[in-house]
Image 1 (tube, one colour):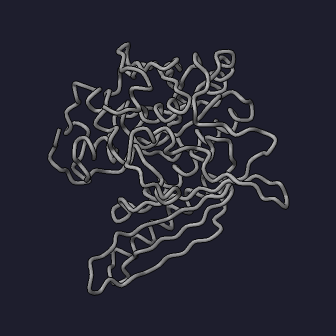
Image 2: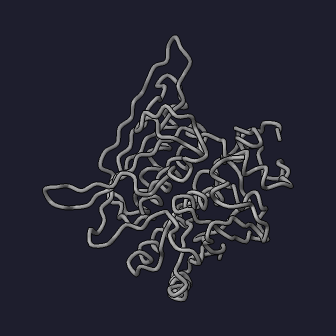
Length: 346
């Protein structure tokens, strides 16, 4: 299970042997605290981390509120990132912005503004100025591409005399508005028989994934696959799908990759999924890779033709993943048991 650590420049997927037993990967990752998280900050829970909590992690309704005086509905989401700011700050910030946008757009909100705080930059280190400049360009480029106003930006330079340096970190907060006459789109599967699609392209990429770090013990890898042009296309098509009410749920492919995104969608209503992997993509990359620019949606069969026509017209790639089941989890015609067993861990 362990692999030799690789540097950012050296890592490729070919260095990692594809596991023969996908079930072993799934149940190994089920105990990863980043995939079965409990919000200690919010709940002050004294319970131990359990796979039971996975259905509520990364949930898409977080941060939605209403201003009482006007009745306006708003949403806010905050994201932080410190990986690879020292290597490629522009791309790292663009990725963080894209993640935040995808989360907002999935439940039907319209992001309008972003604020940024870049801190723990060592002013005595010449590299600190490169990080600040790159982060600034990434923020401005992403905001321009995504139609966001930059409401505020701050940078904090530190001097780390007498103790080890703290890695540079950026925090982004995105504010969004949404139509109060239209219901939010949940991340949860609600109806057996709905078809599951992935909007975007799968990649033979496992870089910077929980799977690579937790299962293969490789913590040093490049940033995941990312194309900002693909992101803008996906953002546009999501808005159209919401306006025409063509999707029943939407989730950005996030931590744990496609499999855990599906699991987070299935567990709340005790549903399952039957999926087929892409023969052109390594199975571990398809299921557990965390490449950017992908959304999982489920669609009522009665709306499928309109859904497909919309994606064709907007020239956005998509892949038919499978369908929602009553509770069984199947991958490539192999059963992995039922959702109630999955939540109990291995």
